[in-house]
Length: 134
Ligand code: THU
Image (cartoon, rainbow, N blue to C red; front, side, top):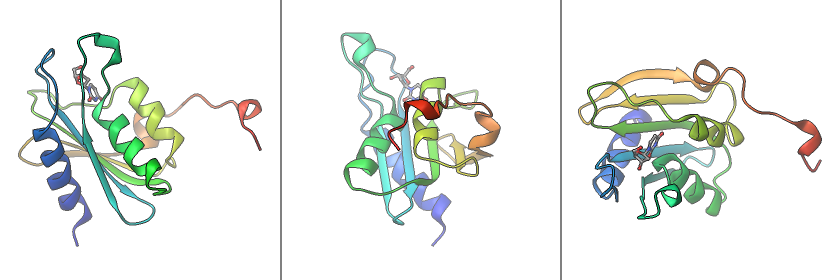
């Protein structure tokens, strides 16, 4: 199975259900998790703008709710002239469940355009060992 292709299909399908009446900017995200399952979601906006959620956040929530473990790979798709990179908040969300080697694929609606590691997109994320519970 070509995981990247499967992620692309799942993210594109989730994107088709994106609820983005305010920005009109539809985003899809799909995660290949540690448990070898795929979790996809889309952005869900709200009339109270800050209440809206990014596609990545939805996919991460679905993975966590299913006890999927860590993120092995994540793909983000949007229809844009310029490639869509995950926002800063979503990079931090990804970092919570990833390793520096976790792959991040960026796609337009036709194909995957770029592949990065998390380390490349977020070389210095917020870490505070003293906040952890262990
Ligand atoms: N958006 C995402 O879903 N993921 C990102 O990484 C960046 C932005 C969404 C949020 C909002 O619904 C729309 O794109 C425009 O900002």
